[in-house]
Length: 115
Image (cartoon, rainbow, N blue to C red; front, side, top):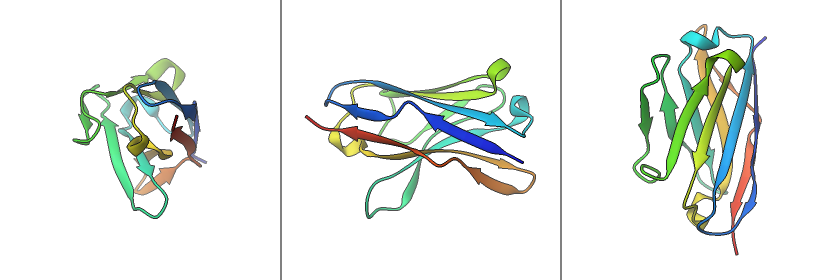
């Protein structure tokens, strides 16, 4: 069974930072591409950042330059460092990977940016 468990969300003021973590099990993490998505209330779930097994990354235009995705293969964990947060970043953030032909999701972690 594949498990993805996010953590690190919370309430932060505009301009602040948070670091999300996603711990995985049940996959060969070293060869898995990992993604972060987010979903705001009433909106669709959007891709925020991706990191491939070779460490190459990609970002949505709205977060480029503010968010950084990274991975620790020894800990089978992917991270999302979020800086210069704005209220528009408020959403539930989900970890995702495609493994053995299907998508796997964590339960998400809430990020709220508000003064």
